[in-house]
Amino acid sequence: MTMKKISVDKAEEIAKEKGLKPGLVKGTDGIQFTKGNNARLETIPWKEFRAKLEERDLAVYESGGWMKIMKK
Image (cartoon, rainbow, N blue to C red; front, side, top):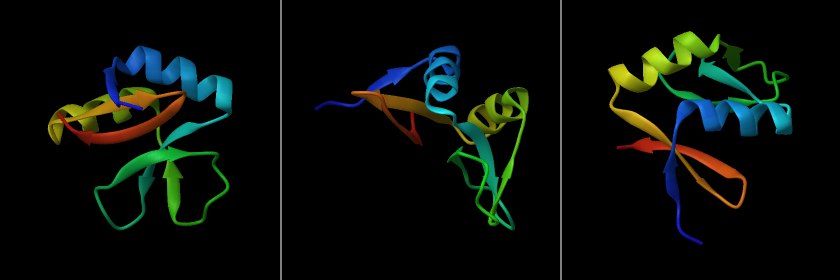
């Protein structure tokens, strides 16, 4: 399957359906989706997630409900 770039609004909708939240990898500037039960990840608000994507020139890509954060 091909990964298609999606909006952050669409990513938020998919994440909520799957019980996911945006997270910041502690001690780095890495971001990823999390269920919130990982000690090395700190959940962050969607507003901060959007800002991190913009500042690092990243986007969310999706294929079959599976999401990945990659360079634009």
